[in-house]
Length: 197
Image (cartoon, rainbow, N blue to C red; front, side, top):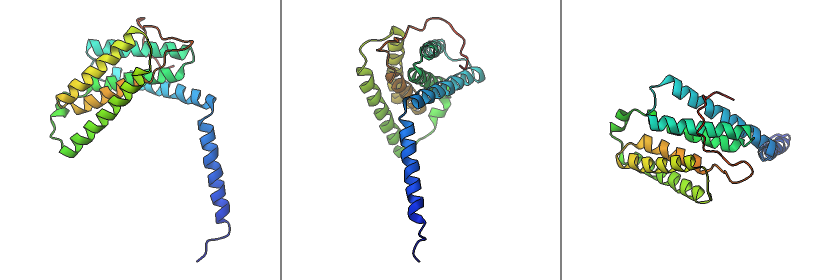
């Protein structure tokens, strides 16, 4: 049975809607709003993680606080994308720090271990590639990034796969932070309470 004559019009309308969505996604004002929303969501998740679970180790808590402080500074200067990436890194670091160590004692299939290793390698390559593009930045961000990379490799080696992936994701998020430009990040040493913006 031949399709009704209105079908081509519906297809054309769908195509127009798809193009309009793509154009809207590339609008700078839309990106700023989207980045601001992302920063808000990541900040909220970090706050929830800090308030609902056992306290983080001191070194992890300091790193999370430093990243959140730098993110707040970036929000104040309108660098929403940098803030969102800092908070995304903080969120992944929090999950890795809170991961139940006993969960890594579960026997995993060779196929799953291979998939995890491939994902880990992909995240690590992305992080290294983006990090190499940076010229210089705040010492605290560099220290956190380097510690994340080392801790991720150590976790993978010891079979703590979930932690390894979360640490690799945290490093990859921080590697996307751009501090070269009119608004350089400060060290983030001022103690501030994490609150939703």
